[in-house]
Image (cartoon, rainbow, N blue to C red; front, side, top):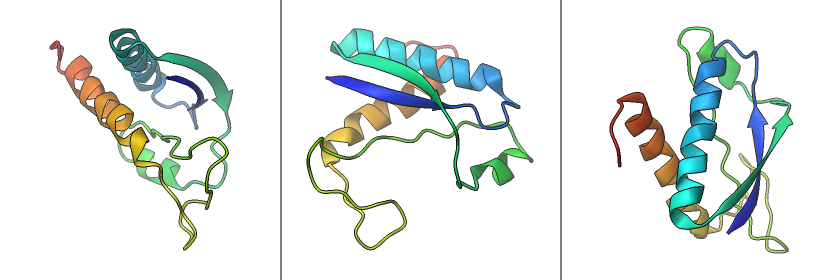
Length: 105
């Protein structure tokens, strides 16, 4: 699988967490034969930054659309998710926890 990933630094109060996420995604890519291309992007209208005012965190926006397939934007009644994205999302979250806790998955 080859995917483009937007890296959203937000206010960058936790740059180390963003870098950790990229390391984990690189491990997932290597282990499962994926290729990820990273591009810096703006956060847009997402309100996750409000939560990050209290605690460091990371926002993982998982692309859930099949190229050329159905599309509906998040938080709308037309939202569509290709369930094939779920394993990559779960492996990313598990990898982040494992990396943070310093153990191998």
